[in-house]
Image (tube, rainbow, N blue to C red; front, top):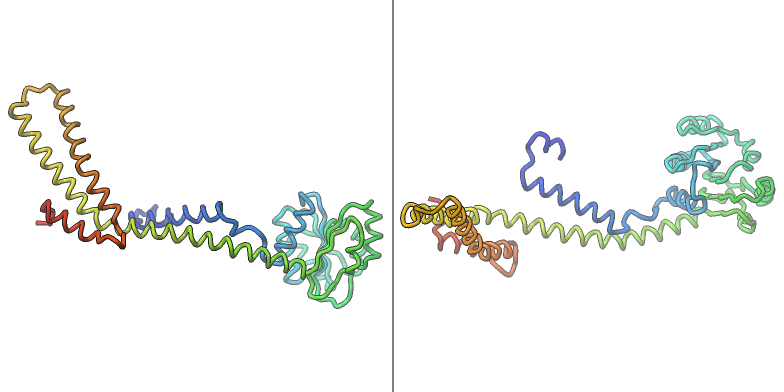
Length: 301
């Protein structure tokens, strides 16, 4: 649209169409909650972390697993301001590769337990069948952290974090089922907001269609105004050349303004009625146009 506009190839219809589209899109974003609430597991995980920690730039995150889900999680976290991110994986080379992409620190898989002490958020996203982080381990880590809060998010298909971690104080544990439940609730909420958005778009579309239909009346309205203006001008010139020829310039200007105002007032009601009935299913606007053309002889010669 911008390119076409710069090239001068956007007509009045497309110009209005795009601007009304931009306007209703902005209203949908600001007046509905259609974009609120994460609906993907990785986004929900980040949202949960944001609820517990008001800022990420001073937090350290450990990512256990460097597969597709792990990479997605890492990018989400970095986009939210995480600066310190450790990555571990059974295959160390994959941890190194992901760490390089996000400017994180790779950790060998066998060494990750001793780094838990400095991790504020631990995210497990592996396919391992066994528990990787035991409740006893977290209890010890919390003592070393002087009970500073920790968030553990287990998004693997199998539980990698001991469920008994939930029994500990100052630690929050969420698993994949928790995240899916939140995502489903958010999706349901978005569906409700989508109905509001659809109604906004419908109303705007109907308004645009009525405006489009009104364009068919523009030539008739223009011709009608011109007919009245021609009559006004002709009669005024005749009077100013006759018995009103001695009027001063100020009086002539006043007479010009008065006759113009009279014409505008006379035309206001019929033109407004014509525009109002444009696109109205109960009124045949074409009949109005035809009647005006016939009554005032507006047909093209």
